[in-house]
Image (cartoon, rainbow, N blue to C red):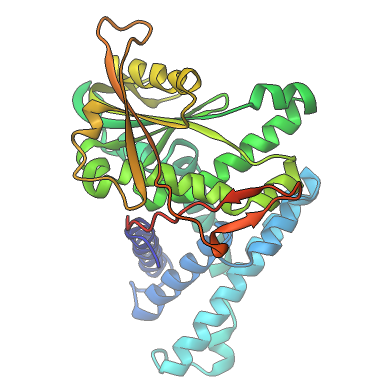
Length: 366
Protein backbone atom coordinates (compact mmCIF):
# COMPACT_ATOMS: atom_id res chain seq x y z
CA UNK A 1 0.00 0.00 0.00
CA UNK A 2 1.30 3.46 -0.90
CA UNK A 3 2.01 5.64 2.14
CA UNK A 4 0.67 9.18 2.48
CA UNK A 5 4.18 10.58 2.01
CA UNK A 6 4.74 8.58 -1.18
CA UNK A 7 1.36 9.57 -2.59
CA UNK A 8 2.08 13.23 -1.83
CA UNK A 9 5.47 12.97 -3.55
CA UNK A 10 3.98 11.65 -6.79
CA UNK A 11 1.14 14.18 -6.71
CA UNK A 12 3.73 16.96 -6.46
CA UNK A 13 5.82 15.44 -9.26
CA UNK A 14 2.69 15.22 -11.44
CA UNK A 15 1.77 18.85 -10.73
CA UNK A 16 5.30 20.12 -11.43
CA UNK A 17 5.51 18.08 -14.65
CA UNK A 18 2.11 19.38 -15.77
CA UNK A 19 3.27 22.97 -15.16
CA UNK A 20 6.31 22.39 -17.38
CA UNK A 21 3.99 20.98 -20.02
CA UNK A 22 2.00 24.21 -19.84
CA UNK A 23 5.25 26.22 -19.97
CA UNK A 24 6.21 24.42 -23.18
CA UNK A 25 2.96 25.65 -24.71
CA UNK A 26 3.76 29.25 -23.74
CA UNK A 27 7.29 29.04 -25.16
CA UNK A 28 6.74 27.13 -28.39
CA UNK A 29 3.03 27.40 -29.22
CA UNK A 30 0.20 29.88 -28.82
CA UNK A 31 -0.35 28.84 -25.22
CA UNK A 32 -0.84 25.80 -23.01
CA UNK A 33 -3.03 23.02 -24.37
CA UNK A 34 -4.55 19.95 -22.77
CA UNK A 35 -2.40 17.55 -24.86
CA UNK A 36 0.72 19.53 -23.90
CA UNK A 37 -0.13 19.33 -20.20
CA UNK A 38 -0.80 15.58 -20.50
CA UNK A 39 2.52 15.13 -22.31
CA UNK A 40 4.36 17.03 -19.58
CA UNK A 41 2.68 15.09 -16.78
CA UNK A 42 3.21 11.62 -18.23
CA UNK A 43 6.78 12.21 -19.42
CA UNK A 44 7.78 13.79 -16.10
CA UNK A 45 6.28 11.01 -13.99
CA UNK A 46 7.80 8.22 -16.12
CA UNK A 47 11.26 9.84 -16.14
CA UNK A 48 11.28 10.36 -12.36
CA UNK A 49 10.00 6.80 -11.86
CA UNK A 50 12.95 5.59 -13.94
CA UNK A 51 15.51 7.76 -12.12
CA UNK A 52 14.25 6.63 -8.70
CA UNK A 53 14.33 2.93 -9.57
CA UNK A 54 10.57 2.40 -9.65
CA UNK A 55 10.75 1.70 -13.38
CA UNK A 56 13.48 -0.55 -14.86
CA UNK A 57 15.10 -1.02 -11.45
CA UNK A 58 17.26 -3.95 -12.57
CA UNK A 59 18.63 -1.99 -15.52
CA UNK A 60 19.47 0.99 -13.28
CA UNK A 61 21.40 -1.28 -10.90
CA UNK A 62 23.32 -2.74 -13.84
CA UNK A 63 24.22 0.77 -15.04
CA UNK A 64 25.66 1.70 -11.64
CA UNK A 65 28.09 -1.20 -11.82
CA UNK A 66 29.73 0.24 -14.97
CA UNK A 67 33.01 2.21 -14.80
CA UNK A 68 32.41 5.92 -14.11
CA UNK A 69 32.88 7.27 -17.66
CA UNK A 70 30.87 4.43 -19.19
CA UNK A 71 28.13 4.93 -16.59
CA UNK A 72 27.86 8.68 -17.30
CA UNK A 73 27.60 8.11 -21.05
CA UNK A 74 25.16 5.22 -20.75
CA UNK A 75 23.04 7.08 -18.20
CA UNK A 76 22.63 10.10 -20.50
CA UNK A 77 21.76 7.95 -23.50
CA UNK A 78 19.31 5.94 -21.39
CA UNK A 79 17.62 9.12 -20.14
CA UNK A 80 17.08 10.32 -23.71
CA UNK A 81 15.65 6.94 -24.72
CA UNK A 82 13.30 6.92 -21.73
CA UNK A 83 12.09 10.43 -22.63
CA UNK A 84 11.49 9.45 -26.27
CA UNK A 85 9.68 6.26 -25.21
CA UNK A 86 7.57 8.19 -22.71
CA UNK A 87 6.60 10.75 -25.37
CA UNK A 88 5.63 7.99 -27.78
CA UNK A 89 3.58 6.14 -25.17
CA UNK A 90 1.81 9.34 -24.15
CA UNK A 91 1.13 10.18 -27.80
CA UNK A 92 -0.48 6.79 -28.36
CA UNK A 93 -2.76 7.29 -25.34
CA UNK A 94 -3.75 10.78 -26.51
CA UNK A 95 -4.51 9.38 -29.99
CA UNK A 96 -6.61 6.55 -28.54
CA UNK A 97 -8.61 9.03 -26.44
CA UNK A 98 -9.09 11.32 -29.45
CA UNK A 99 -7.80 14.34 -27.51
CA UNK A 100 -5.62 15.61 -30.38
CA UNK A 101 -6.51 15.66 -34.05
CA UNK A 102 -3.45 13.78 -35.30
CA UNK A 103 -2.76 10.62 -37.17
CA UNK A 104 -1.39 7.73 -35.12
CA UNK A 105 2.07 8.17 -36.67
CA UNK A 106 2.10 11.89 -35.86
CA UNK A 107 0.95 11.22 -32.30
CA UNK A 108 3.65 8.65 -31.46
CA UNK A 109 6.52 10.46 -33.20
CA UNK A 110 8.23 12.88 -30.79
CA UNK A 111 9.02 16.35 -32.12
CA UNK A 112 12.76 16.88 -32.32
CA UNK A 113 12.41 20.42 -30.92
CA UNK A 114 10.60 19.10 -27.84
CA UNK A 115 13.22 16.52 -26.84
CA UNK A 116 15.90 19.06 -25.71
CA UNK A 117 13.27 20.88 -23.62
CA UNK A 118 12.23 17.59 -21.99
CA UNK A 119 15.88 16.71 -21.29
CA UNK A 120 16.58 20.07 -19.63
CA UNK A 121 13.40 19.95 -17.54
CA UNK A 122 14.06 16.33 -16.50
CA UNK A 123 17.65 17.17 -15.51
CA UNK A 124 16.39 20.12 -13.46
CA UNK A 125 13.79 18.06 -11.58
CA UNK A 126 16.23 15.19 -11.01
CA UNK A 127 18.86 17.62 -9.66
CA UNK A 128 16.40 19.16 -7.20
CA UNK A 129 15.30 15.70 -6.05
CA UNK A 130 18.95 14.69 -5.64
CA UNK A 131 19.54 17.63 -3.29
CA UNK A 132 16.33 16.70 -1.45
CA UNK A 133 17.52 13.12 -1.03
CA UNK A 134 20.97 14.20 0.18
CA UNK A 135 19.70 16.44 2.98
CA UNK A 136 16.35 14.74 3.67
CA UNK A 137 12.86 15.67 2.50
CA UNK A 138 11.86 17.33 5.77
CA UNK A 139 15.06 19.36 5.95
CA UNK A 140 14.74 20.34 2.29
CA UNK A 141 11.19 21.56 2.84
CA UNK A 142 12.19 23.55 5.93
CA UNK A 143 15.14 25.16 4.13
CA UNK A 144 12.92 26.16 1.18
CA UNK A 145 10.28 27.62 3.51
CA UNK A 146 12.91 29.29 5.71
CA UNK A 147 11.25 27.88 8.80
CA UNK A 148 14.44 27.84 10.87
CA UNK A 149 16.17 31.00 9.67
CA UNK A 150 15.74 32.10 13.27
CA UNK A 151 16.18 29.56 16.09
CA UNK A 152 12.92 28.19 17.47
CA UNK A 153 11.94 26.02 20.43
CA UNK A 154 10.07 22.86 19.54
CA UNK A 155 9.22 19.46 20.99
CA UNK A 156 10.83 16.49 19.22
CA UNK A 157 11.46 12.79 19.73
CA UNK A 158 14.91 11.43 18.89
CA UNK A 159 15.95 7.89 18.07
CA UNK A 160 19.66 7.11 18.15
CA UNK A 161 20.58 3.87 16.37
CA UNK A 162 24.06 2.41 16.64
CA UNK A 163 25.42 -0.62 14.78
CA UNK A 164 26.92 -2.96 17.38
CA UNK A 165 30.30 -4.49 16.56
CA UNK A 166 31.06 -2.27 13.56
CA UNK A 167 34.55 -1.37 14.83
CA UNK A 168 35.47 -5.03 15.29
CA UNK A 169 34.08 -5.81 11.83
CA UNK A 170 36.26 -3.06 10.31
CA UNK A 171 39.33 -4.42 12.07
CA UNK A 172 38.71 -7.91 10.67
CA UNK A 173 37.56 -7.04 7.16
CA UNK A 174 38.84 -3.53 6.48
CA UNK A 175 37.25 -0.11 6.24
CA UNK A 176 35.80 -0.62 2.74
CA UNK A 177 33.98 -3.78 3.80
CA UNK A 178 32.71 -2.02 6.93
CA UNK A 179 31.43 0.84 4.79
CA UNK A 180 29.57 -1.62 2.56
CA UNK A 181 27.95 -3.10 5.66
CA UNK A 182 26.92 0.34 6.94
CA UNK A 183 25.58 1.29 3.54
CA UNK A 184 23.45 -1.86 3.39
CA UNK A 185 22.13 -1.30 6.93
CA UNK A 186 21.29 2.36 6.27
CA UNK A 187 19.49 1.33 3.08
CA UNK A 188 17.49 -1.34 4.94
CA UNK A 189 16.25 1.03 7.65
CA UNK A 190 15.12 3.74 5.23
CA UNK A 191 11.76 2.13 4.39
CA UNK A 192 10.61 1.61 8.01
CA UNK A 193 11.59 5.20 8.82
CA UNK A 194 9.49 6.48 5.93
CA UNK A 195 6.62 4.15 6.83
CA UNK A 196 6.46 5.52 10.38
CA UNK A 197 6.91 9.12 9.20
CA UNK A 198 10.27 9.76 10.80
CA UNK A 199 13.13 11.69 9.26
CA UNK A 200 16.81 10.78 9.16
CA UNK A 201 18.61 13.85 10.48
CA UNK A 202 22.21 12.68 10.35
CA UNK A 203 24.65 9.83 9.96
CA UNK A 204 27.57 9.95 12.39
CA UNK A 205 29.98 7.10 11.74
CA UNK A 206 27.99 3.93 12.44
CA UNK A 207 25.18 5.86 14.12
CA UNK A 208 21.90 7.12 12.65
CA UNK A 209 19.90 9.95 14.20
CA UNK A 210 16.16 9.88 13.45
CA UNK A 211 13.54 12.29 14.76
CA UNK A 212 9.83 13.11 14.79
CA UNK A 213 7.87 16.18 15.85
CA UNK A 214 6.60 15.13 19.27
CA UNK A 215 2.92 14.86 18.36
CA UNK A 216 3.61 12.80 15.23
CA UNK A 217 6.02 10.42 16.96
CA UNK A 218 3.70 9.83 19.92
CA UNK A 219 0.62 9.21 17.77
CA UNK A 220 0.12 5.44 17.48
CA UNK A 221 3.52 5.10 19.20
CA UNK A 222 5.19 5.52 15.81
CA UNK A 223 8.63 6.12 17.31
CA UNK A 224 8.57 2.74 19.09
CA UNK A 225 6.92 0.85 16.23
CA UNK A 226 9.63 2.16 13.92
CA UNK A 227 12.40 0.64 16.07
CA UNK A 228 10.89 -2.84 16.02
CA UNK A 229 10.00 -2.60 12.33
CA UNK A 230 13.68 -1.93 11.65
CA UNK A 231 14.72 -4.91 13.78
CA UNK A 232 12.26 -7.12 11.91
CA UNK A 233 13.55 -5.98 8.52
CA UNK A 234 17.08 -6.97 9.51
CA UNK A 235 16.02 -10.29 11.04
CA UNK A 236 13.76 -11.20 8.13
CA UNK A 237 16.73 -11.18 5.74
CA UNK A 238 18.96 -13.12 8.15
CA UNK A 239 20.22 -15.59 5.53
CA UNK A 240 21.05 -12.84 3.04
CA UNK A 241 23.00 -10.85 5.65
CA UNK A 242 24.99 -13.91 6.69
CA UNK A 243 25.72 -14.86 3.09
CA UNK A 244 26.91 -11.36 2.21
CA UNK A 245 28.59 -10.15 5.41
CA UNK A 246 28.87 -13.20 7.66
CA UNK A 247 26.61 -11.70 10.32
CA UNK A 248 23.17 -10.31 11.02
CA UNK A 249 23.37 -6.60 11.97
CA UNK A 250 22.49 -5.86 15.58
CA UNK A 251 21.35 -2.34 16.42
CA UNK A 252 21.30 -0.58 19.78
CA UNK A 253 18.50 1.95 20.04
CA UNK A 254 17.66 4.80 22.43
CA UNK A 255 14.46 6.88 22.47
CA UNK A 256 14.01 10.17 24.29
CA UNK A 257 12.16 13.40 23.65
CA UNK A 258 11.55 16.91 24.85
CA UNK A 259 12.25 20.55 24.08
CA UNK A 260 15.12 21.45 21.74
CA UNK A 261 16.26 24.57 19.92
CA UNK A 262 16.15 24.04 16.17
CA UNK A 263 18.06 26.33 13.84
CA UNK A 264 19.46 26.56 10.32
CA UNK A 265 23.27 26.66 10.54
CA UNK A 266 26.14 26.92 8.08
CA UNK A 267 27.28 29.31 5.36
CA UNK A 268 28.51 27.35 2.34
CA UNK A 269 26.69 24.21 3.45
CA UNK A 270 23.37 24.66 5.25
CA UNK A 271 21.73 22.14 7.56
CA UNK A 272 19.09 21.99 10.26
CA UNK A 273 20.70 21.41 13.68
CA UNK A 274 19.26 20.67 17.12
CA UNK A 275 20.59 21.99 20.40
CA UNK A 276 19.76 21.11 23.98
CA UNK A 277 19.98 18.53 26.74
CA UNK A 278 17.62 16.15 24.91
CA UNK A 279 20.25 15.43 22.25
CA UNK A 280 22.99 14.78 24.80
CA UNK A 281 20.71 12.66 26.98
CA UNK A 282 19.64 10.49 24.05
CA UNK A 283 23.27 9.90 23.08
CA UNK A 284 24.12 8.91 26.67
CA UNK A 285 21.04 6.67 26.80
CA UNK A 286 22.23 4.83 23.70
CA UNK A 287 25.56 4.26 25.44
CA UNK A 288 23.68 2.80 28.40
CA UNK A 289 22.50 -0.06 26.16
CA UNK A 290 25.95 -1.63 26.54
CA UNK A 291 25.99 -1.39 30.34
CA UNK A 292 22.47 -2.75 30.75
CA UNK A 293 22.85 -5.33 27.96
CA UNK A 294 19.54 -4.21 26.47
CA UNK A 295 18.99 -3.55 22.78
CA UNK A 296 16.29 -0.86 23.08
CA UNK A 297 15.99 1.75 25.84
CA UNK A 298 13.45 4.50 26.31
CA UNK A 299 13.24 7.27 28.88
CA UNK A 300 10.30 7.21 31.26
CA UNK A 301 9.59 10.82 30.31
CA UNK A 302 8.83 9.72 26.75
CA UNK A 303 7.23 6.39 27.64
CA UNK A 304 4.72 8.16 29.89
CA UNK A 305 3.55 10.30 26.95
CA UNK A 306 2.80 7.38 24.66
CA UNK A 307 -0.88 6.39 24.46
CA UNK A 308 0.17 2.71 24.53
CA UNK A 309 2.90 0.45 23.25
CA UNK A 310 2.51 -1.29 19.89
CA UNK A 311 1.10 -4.80 19.92
CA UNK A 312 3.80 -7.32 20.74
CA UNK A 313 6.07 -4.88 22.59
CA UNK A 314 6.54 -4.67 26.35
CA UNK A 315 8.48 -2.38 28.71
CA UNK A 316 10.73 -3.44 31.58
CA UNK A 317 11.50 -0.86 34.27
CA UNK A 318 15.24 -0.51 34.89
CA UNK A 319 15.00 2.29 37.45
CA UNK A 320 16.99 5.53 37.64
CA UNK A 321 20.42 5.78 36.00
CA UNK A 322 23.01 8.52 36.20
CA UNK A 323 24.10 9.52 32.72
CA UNK A 324 27.44 11.23 32.19
CA UNK A 325 27.12 15.01 31.93
CA UNK A 326 23.67 15.18 33.55
CA UNK A 327 22.96 16.49 37.03
CA UNK A 328 19.80 14.39 37.49
CA UNK A 329 19.18 10.67 37.17
CA UNK A 330 17.04 9.45 34.27
CA UNK A 331 14.44 6.75 34.84
CA UNK A 332 14.91 4.20 32.07
CA UNK A 333 12.87 1.33 30.62
CA UNK A 334 13.95 -1.46 28.27
CA UNK A 335 11.68 -2.36 25.37
CA UNK A 336 11.46 -5.84 23.93
CA UNK A 337 9.13 -8.10 22.05
CA UNK A 338 6.75 -10.08 24.24
CA UNK A 339 7.64 -13.69 24.71
CA UNK A 340 4.98 -16.14 23.64
CA UNK A 341 4.53 -19.85 24.12
CA UNK A 342 6.37 -21.81 21.48
CA UNK A 343 4.74 -24.13 19.03
CA UNK A 344 6.39 -26.19 16.30
CA UNK A 345 5.72 -23.41 13.79
CA UNK A 346 7.50 -20.89 16.03
CA UNK A 347 10.78 -22.78 16.18
CA UNK A 348 13.45 -23.16 13.56
CA UNK A 349 16.69 -25.06 13.79
CA UNK A 350 20.13 -23.45 13.47
CA UNK A 351 22.87 -25.15 11.55
CA UNK A 352 24.54 -26.05 14.85
CA UNK A 353 21.38 -27.81 16.02
CA UNK A 354 20.12 -25.20 18.52
CA UNK A 355 16.71 -23.56 18.21
CA UNK A 356 15.91 -19.90 17.86
CA UNK A 357 12.69 -18.12 18.60
CA UNK A 358 11.08 -16.41 15.66
CA UNK A 359 10.38 -12.75 16.22
CA UNK A 360 6.75 -11.84 16.70
CA UNK A 361 5.42 -9.53 14.04
CA UNK A 362 4.57 -6.06 15.26
CA UNK A 363 1.56 -5.44 13.09
CA UNK A 364 1.17 -1.76 13.86
CA UNK A 365 -0.20 0.67 11.32
CA UNK A 366 1.81 3.78 10.56
